[in-house]
Image 1 (cartoon, helix red, strand yellow):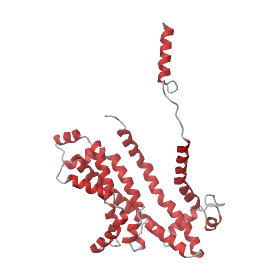
Image 2 (cartoon, rainbow, N blue to C red):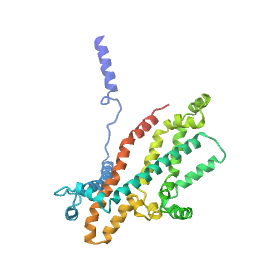
Image 3 (cartoon, rainbow, N blue to C red):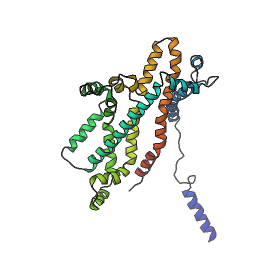
Image 4 (cartoon, rainbow, N blue to C red):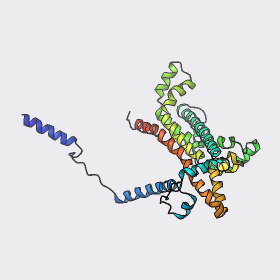
Amino acid sequence: MTATVESTVDAVARTRSPRGAVGRRPRRRSVVLTIVYWTLLAYFLLPIAWLLINATKSNAALFTTFGLALPPELNLWNNLQDLVSYQDGIFVRWFGNTVLYAVVGAGGAAVIAAIGGYALAKYTFAGKRAVIVTILGATAVPGTALAVPTYMLFSQWGLINTEAAVILPSLVSPFGLFLMMIYAADAVPDSLLEAARIDGAGEFRTFWTIAFRLLAPGFVTVLLFQLVQTWNNYFLPLIVLNQQDKFPLTVGLSQWNKLANAGGVNVAEPLYPLVITGALVAILPLCVAFVFLQRYWQSGIAAGGIKQ
């Protein structure tokens, strides 16, 4: 009897174990997909590696050494000092302008998208279908196509060469609004909203205390998308801004790069290390933002994977 029980237990254990599973096929590896994967990985990581390595080079080492080879002496600290002191520290001003444009623009766009998406998902009103169709149509319009009309409109309003000329267009995100509408339709249960209304909570309080917490993963997703878009915005600030002290990093570094290319060896050698080091510093805040906000993405994916 004991032998029979032990054999039964062993059979069940072998059935439940991954190696002893009946009918499970061994995992196949595709050589083509592996090559494609590593090719894409190298495509994205090699430019970053090049940037990290060349930011540590001096003027002479930058032009005399291989791009992916470390210099004999690391010069990163000197490059950083030259970066923040060149032209009376204009790079620090550009960095502050970029933070202002990105935080206000991306944060405001994410909040507006959350409110609008929640309203489109949970309320019924006349013209709702027309609004959704308009939003879908707006997602297909590239931002560069609206740059010139935006400039003409802001010129009539007297907003040219002001911070508002960069921030106001960043507050509008049709893609973020549509994304939040889709997310709010499933993430916020109607029964929970009805319970809050029965308890006497107003619509404004219901949204901020209940719905907004449930929309946190979608809100962070839109925030990161807008943060990257606003941080890397180049064409619109180039058109609406003409004072150097109001430039973001993208426009400022581009001006330095053009000056280096057009100025010959005497001007190019001091400026190229500043442009490379400035580009390295410019991508660090985005990396930090992704590292600290990725847990909201993970929680959203985990919540979406639970079958209710």
